[in-house]
Length: 515
Image (tube, rainbow, N blue to C red; front, side, top):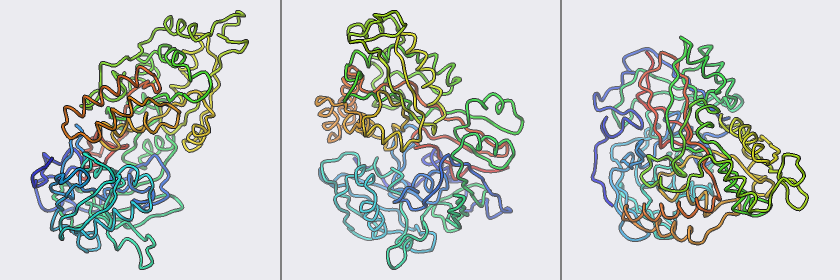
């Protein structure tokens, strides 16, 4: 694959960062300071892109950029790279954008990119796993070769992953200790308060692109509690809030001081089943659970219409999603039948099915970081009780949930993940099926995903992935309950805010403005 050397214009980049070809001069230089205050749903503990600061720096603050970026339709477009081509099975060559400077005035070039990606590959195991980079070769000042450990047709897609955000070698001191993120984005870092988790940045007057906004400063505030984000928005303390509590939705929609917007995204709500031990090792029990859940009711009533009913395991707008798989539509009678086939019946008339004298009790875990998780779990308890299945529930923080999953201490785990963290057909399925922490394995599924990974022809690649999805869905090793809906609360003064479905959480375009 090769894409021509393209000048980034409003048409090409507006959906991602709001860059416009209208003027080479930012409107910020023509106005007084305007501070866009953004409530971030996590606690910012690092501003090093190799150590957890990548999403905030790239998508929220606009300080860092990547070689490529993904449009909302999941197509890959140039950013700091202008063109690329695969030169052999394990090597991709990227031409870098000339005339770009880092925020301290140092040159953006091939040596800087190699230093940054090599550093991330060494320090960050997730980066190493996602990118599969074996080595990076500097060909000339503005050309690099990225070599992978195995044949890989998706390096351009990987290069829009937030972890590949480029910072200057001057971001570290002479001993290699990280000091500050010096990127290439429209905003440059000015301060990070580790105590409050507040990050500030200001417009960079040497930015390589063409941007129209009167915003001169962005302040990103750590607000992991959704209720605190909602209250701050109502009080006029912030301008943009994501994932507002569903309990506040009606009130905020009726408020003159808040604009509420909703977008569909590639993120999903899904149940992971413990396929290694307990009742969920039986596919009939897993399928019974799936049939017991009324997805339409969950989306329309439980989630208050935020999101969509899935037609497959991922967002149907993704070109590689198979929408013709088994979806286990609500059928409590079928659920009861499958439980009976698995040996579970109510033999003592207590309202709960049992086997060998033991009631079927499922241990469900989830976390509160996504607004729909506790609500879906609560609804699930009711749906399962209706087919005679008892439950016990734990809502714990995400890290604790992952530890319990790794220890096998669960039957069902309600999770939420972006299916386009890296916008490739294999990324999500590798996470969900091949590298699953829940014990699910299907060698035929694994083989199809591996074959797709090494296939460059898109039609063939997508067909292989769709075959894998159908097989995995028949096993019901994972079950998508709902497609995630992104809900934003905006100060009415905010303009030009757009949503990108390929974002990890949400992107604040450079063009986002304040009246």
